[in-house]
Image (cartoon, rainbow over all chains, first blue to last red; front, side, top):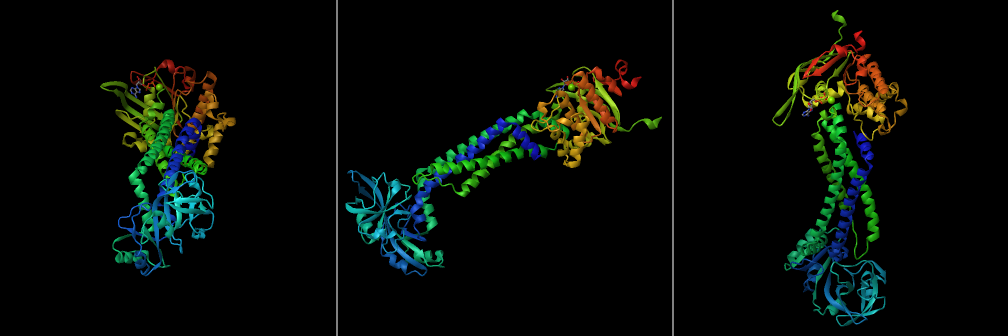
Length: 374
Length: 241
Ligand SMILES: Nc1ncnc2c1ncn2[C@@H]1O[C@H](COP(=O)(O)OP(=O)(O)O)[C@@H](O)[C@H]1O
Ligand SMILES: [Mg+2]
């Protein structure tokens, strides 16, 4: 029945185009909308995802990488003694303000990492070297946040928390979820900028020795420091994401917009399939009179729905990849994960099949007698 | 004498049918008996609304009678489930609809091959047979044409070939010449007789068209829910002389 399905579908060119627009619209909307959402929400766990630490140790009930509470720095020694730990370094994250040349100021998130290992330090440097940060007063900022910090260049001087800082490196694409720019520096300098006690830190970042069991190491750390929370990297990343999702309701608004898009696509496909079936009721009646079985009639609609979904999804994904390239920026990244693209194709397939059900029910009611009665 | 009566393909006896619309019930057929035989062409005539299409639908297993017996190729229809009836139509009954009911988007040959497709018998042999038939009815140059670009006479031939190609033993045609001019009507009837009776098919033609009466072997008039033969129409029959 597939050839009949295709040829009749193509014969109704206008309706075919409308239905395809519906499918393409759904696919593009879900993927771009979802891609913007994923791109945005992933910023919430940027430091965790890119930070290279296997395990994060911090204050009890820590819940967002950007908003830590200080812990004793000495814990680092207790953790270094745990078998299976290759390295454990203090890490500091905190809010401060940067004074700008114009006389204005901007809130910044100061990130300080151990000067020997630079665990948790900046990545994606486009100017300067990774160890430039060891230069006196060295800080690394992101070029994409340049407009907020009045376009810092290498060698420019800024003031953070009342102390001088010199830009020694520029990264590309490190923009966090909170709109405050990150400033990377060494642990000692960060302590000064943030005006906190030298014997505290925000987290202790742990790297495992090759072959060490992460669960076993975490268990030992928990035994040694019952006052700390210890999470694997992915878990803490997800926690940071969930923090913003639940506290801003972002997931709901993005999800609602996406569902709306799917709904519009569904209506367009359903309405066109239904309209083309109404146009052809007597043809279906004739097929029934000739002795077509129910499953054969249904398979025509099924084939039409499936081919609409497949062709529409392919066009849609092609458009998505173009749009993604056009609108993607580090500040508004469009990250379309594979599961989203595949998921949207599955959704669209289900939508098309659902849309073919209604016209099928209409055809079921067609009495072949109609074709004999003029 | 008994030997030259051809075998029966379909038989109706005591068939009653009325349409119910709400509480009202319109009787249409009130005790119809009809026997179709191989190689014979039966005409059904009668005023509009007298129930000719209804009778055709019953013969074609599309409609069940309220009362009476319908037997097609030896099978009692009331004992068949709807899917079994559909299967019987597919194998053994060919329809030529008044309005052709060709499928938009399929070319002439593809339309002719729809029954093959429904029977899962589409192959080079069957398609070859269909093309051959199309040549026979003068559609040789229009095999790949879109029926929307063809005249009604040509479309009626496509519909005729669609009903014939599948090899059905019983052919039911509802006003096959109604949308055709006199010449096309004659030609379609010539083809119908030539292609059916030689192969021993039974043909039922519902018509108002007196010009084609000479093609009938038997003519029945449907009136007041019953069939009768009338001498007036019989006089116009080819075989009556
Ligand atoms: N589905 C139906 N419901 C109710 N009445 C019907 C239906 N089909 C036909 N009729 C009525 O039955 C009568 C016979 O119809 P039909 O068999 O189409 O007659 P013909 O083909 O001889 O014109 C007509 O009066 C028509 O109005
Ligand atoms: Mg009629």
